[in-house]
Length: 188
Image 1 (spheres, one colour):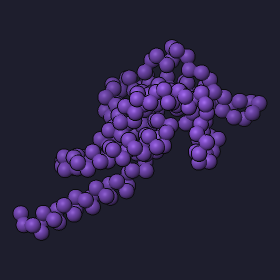
Image 2 (image 1 turned 120 degrees about the horizontal axis):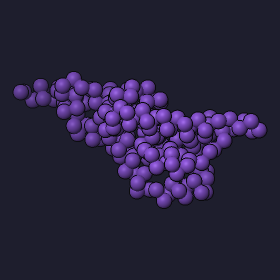
Image 3 (image 1 turned 120 degrees about the vertical axis):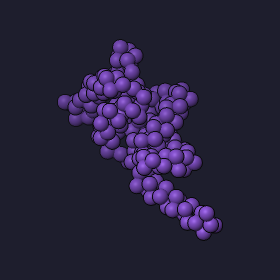
Image 4 (image 1 turned 90 degrees about the vertical axis):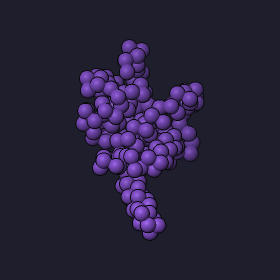
């Protein structure tokens, strides 16, 4: 190949990746944020996932495959790794309340994020992928490495907990937090 052809191919590759990033990044950040409850961690995990995607761009798009599920899976796994390393910090945040410098959020969004934080990580992940990203159970199963039945079970258990946590309190009109029982928390 000529030098001009190589440069043109590299430019097209960069343009394709840039367009992919621009079209998908915000949605992936939103999904990982919903899983983690921490915007900074979500942005970091997603940024790293896109860096890894760029390094493998030709393989990810070589057969005309959609690279989005791969990016979403990598970002989710990176976020889960972060959860494991920062478990004590998260527990301290629950004890001491939310950070003071958070942007204004609606009461519904705060209640949803708090309810999602109370779910075990595998349940939280399937809820975000299925309900917030509208992915079918089969695709959620592929992206999480679980069976369709396991995804459905996690969704069912998570819905039960979220339903209880997001039930309107008649006196205040605010979401009423309901503790997760050991039995529910021990089932992924």
